[in-house]
Length: 298
Image 1: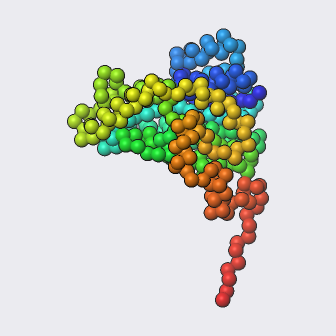
Image 2: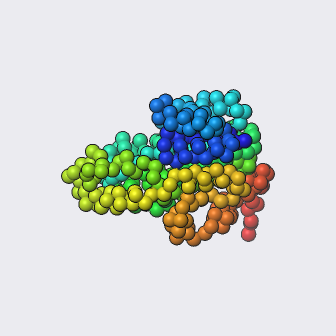
Image 3: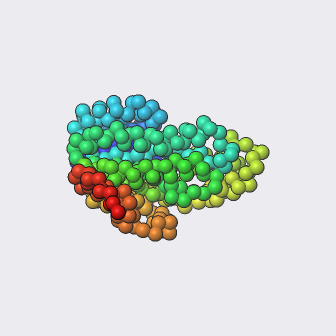
C-alpha cells in the first residue's frame, strides 16, 4: 500500500486519480478547496470501500503546507507519492490580462506545486524514497497565442521540475512530468461562455479580439473530442512503479506526437547531456565533490 497525496480532487484529473489510486489499494489523501466539493468523492469512497481521506486545502495558503504534510505523516507514517494536479486557466491576450490574473495563475500553477513538493521532501529524504508527479500540459512545451499566463506557469513548472530531479535523485526520490493534451476536466470550459465568442468578462474592445475569438472558437470545437480523465488517472497509477528514468510522460497520442516533434532527444539522452554540462554525477551517485581542477601553468 502506497500513501498518496493528490491536490485538486473535487473534479477532473484529481477526482479520477484519487479513485484510481484508491481502487489500486493505496491510501489517498485528496485535497479539495471546500467541504461541499468533496462530497462526491466521499460518497465514492464509501460506496466502493476504498481508502480516500479528504483534506481541505487552499493552494495559495502555502503557509499551511507543512502542517498538512505533518498530519499525513503522523497518520500514515510516510508519504510515497505526491501528485500536484490542481491548476487554473485564464485565457486571453497578454496585453489584455491584468496583473492580478497573471499572478493568480502563477501562484496556483507554479508556486503552489513547487512549495508543496518542498514540504514533502524532508519526509521523502528520511525514507530515501518517494515519487513527485507534476501534472503539466502541452502548453508547457509549446506556447500558443491567447494562452500566455497558463503557458508561462507550465513552462516554469517544467523547468523547475527538470532541475529538481537532479537534486533529489541522491535520495532515490523520483520526479515526473505528465504532459496532457485537452481532457474533459472542465478546466478550459470554465472560462468559455457558451453564449459568447470571448472568455467571461473579456474586454470587447480589445485590439486582439479577432485572435482571441478564433482561439476560443477552436478550443470550443475541440471540447467534445477531449480525452477521458480516467485515461490519465490510469497512467498516474503506473508511473510510481517505474524506475524514474523517464521524466516526461505523454498522457495521450497527441501529447506523444508533439513531444517527439519538440524534443529531438529522449529523456535518457537529455539527462546525459545535462549531467555532462553540470558535472554532477557525483551528487546523484551519493558521492563527494571532486577536487578542484589544478590550473595548468605554461
